Length: 539
Image (cartoon, rainbow, N blue to C red; front, side, top):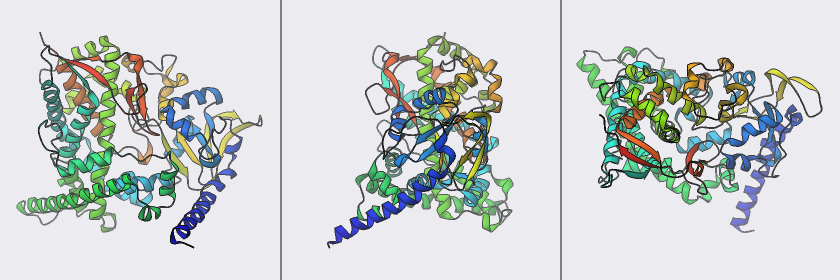
C-alpha cells in the first residue's frame, strides 16, 4: 500500500471518528422536537443558507417558528437558534458552560490567538490583566490619536478630489486604512502609515493586511477537515495557510522586539522614579500594549496570574482583528445610513458644528446627543457582527421567558440541550425584531433613542441595551475604545465632507461571511460602498 493511500485512509478514519464524537451526542437533546426549517443538505444542514443570507434569514425563521428554532448543522445535527431573552441571559452569563465552539477556537488561535481564542481560567487571567488598559481614563488618553488619524483620512480623500471639487470613491479602503493606522499607534505605538499615499508599505503592515484579508471560512469541506483534523495542515497545506504562516512569523518576530523594547522602557521609567517595581497605579500610557505590559508587570498581582510573553504577544493581532475591520465596517454603515437620509446627515452636521474645536475631548464627544443616537442606531440596525455561537459543554436545561409548543403539540417551559449542541445567538435578528422594537424596527431612526421601547430593558448587553458588543464575562473588552474611535471618526468626517450615495440605494446589500456583514453591491461578493464626497464649506 502506497504512503499516500495509508495517509488518506488514516485521514478518513480520523474524520469518521471525529464526526461520530462531534455529531452523535447532539441528537440526544430535546432540540429535535423544536419547530424549525427542514435541512437543506445532509452534509451542511442549513449552514450554507445561513451563510448566504448574512443574518437576514434568522428573523424570518423566528417570525415563522417562534423565538426558539431548531436549525440543522453538519450532518443534520440539531442546534438551537433563540431570541428568548431569558435563554440568552443564561447562555451568555455562564461562559464555562457555553464556550465558543472548539473548531472556531482552533481556527481563531491558529491565526490571531489572544483573548479572543481562550476560555476558562486562561480567559479570566488575560481579562484581569487587560482590563486596566481599557478603562475610561486610558481611552480618554487615546482620543487625540483617533481624531488625528481621522483628520489624516480627510487629507487622504481631499488629495484625490477632481477639479470640480468632488470625489467618487469606495470608502471602505480609506476607512480600513484609517482604522489600521489607529490600532497601530493606539494599540502598540507603531506607525503603519497606511494613509500615506506615496509611502511604501512596511513589513508589519503587509503581514497584518494578509491576516485581515484572509478571514477563516467554515463553508468548505477542505476548511472543515483542517479544523477537525489539524495535523493534515502539515502534510497538505493550502495557499492560504502558507500565507498566514508567513504573516504570523513576521508578527511574532516584530512583536517580540516591541515587547522587549517596551519592557526596557517601563523598567527605565520606574528606575528614574526611584522604584525598582511597577504598581497598578502606574498603569497609564499612550498605547494599549504598554498599558497591558505595565499591568502584567505590577507587583500586586500573583505570579500565577501573569501572562507569558507569548500570551502578551498574542494580543497584538487580537487588537487588530477586534478593533480594525469591525470599526471600519461600522463607519461604512453609518455613512451609508446618512446618505440614504440627507436630512439626518444635515441634522448631525448642525450639532457637530456647535463644537468650536476640531479636537474635542472624549467627554465632549460623549456629550453630543444626536451623534450618540446615530451611533446607537447604526450599531442596532447594522451590527457588524450579525451572529455569535456558543457550544454546550455538558447537558443542561435552558430557561425561557415564555412557554412554547414543540412539534408534538406539547407545551414546554424550558429547553434541554446536550453536550456539543450549539446555540446560535442572532444579534441582528434581535436588534431588528418588531416584537421588541416596533413596526419600524427595520428603519434607521436615531430619534427612537429619545424614548426607547420598554421591551429592551431586559436585553442582555454590555452597552446601550444592544448585543453588538455581547454580554456577560466574555463581552467585548474594547467596547469603549471602539465607540470613542467611531464617534471621533464620524465627528471629523461629517464636519469636513458632504456624502452622497454613488449608486441607487437598492443596489447596496450586505455581503460577507458567516459572522460579519459589510455593505456591498448587489451581484458582488466583496465589500464595496461607492460614495460621492464634496468638501463642506462652512458659512
